[in-house]
Image (cartoon, rainbow, N blue to C red; front, side):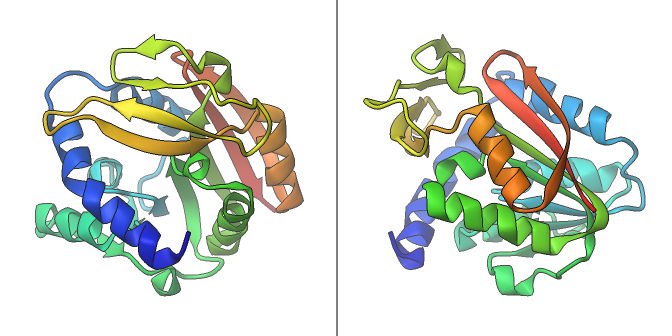
Length: 223
């Protein structure tokens, strides 16, 4: 898939994602997973933070309001446009081009439910890119689906079991939204494979934790 096709694909979904998070029902990613990640990372006040795959900026806003200096990146120009319109009074930088991100700069990087959206080669490159943007000594938090729960229904989404349970196998995740069902293609990565990918990209594993059953968090450090 070309970058242009990818941009178009996520642009087409931007309004559905916005409707999903505008829905007042609780989302475990916001109420449990994200707070737990920040709890482990520690104080972010005054830190330079990159929200990689920020979508419409919901986590970027929270971190900004906690005192962080936040940059949000998403490959969907439409999502970034929505984020900017919602945050016109906040000092958050939003970009849809990776060329605008700074190397060896960000003290904290979060990447929530983004890595699993990429096939193997692109996933490896994404981790490598994040390593490049992270300041030496910086901390990175990755959140992905716990593939042990595939095939089970949860209140906010359902992920199918792939036909072949091998690394990089595609599967569909279905997410109900007020603007219709959102269907995305995700990729099967075991915790062991993810940890090897992080290691191959020179990250040091600081911690691994399953949160709310369906999510797995990895905390990494760039030496």
